[in-house]
Image 1 (spheres, rainbow, N blue to C red):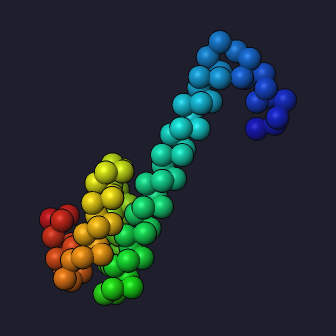
Image 2 (image 1 turned 120 degrees about the horizontal axis):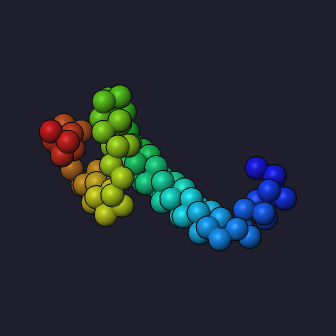
Image 3 (image 1 turned 90 degrees about the horizontal axis):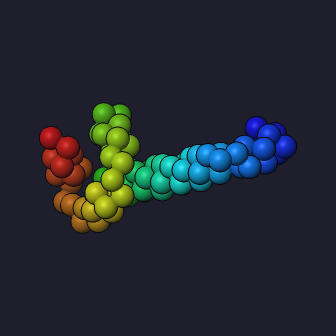
Length: 88
């Protein structure tokens, strides 16, 4: 999107609100994606790379609090199998 068009959108009654909402949604999505990748990284370092299915399940979690709990669990669980039970 060109800077000129962006400025025009910001000046419309709902443009600034829409852009702020989009920005906030993008930021939240980036945070959840980062946390999911952190979980996969911790599991890979501690055990082995999780299966494609488990990676997909981890990436599908969009609640930041749940992801924080899963980060803690990935660091303390006794096996990859134990971690996987959280999704079964």
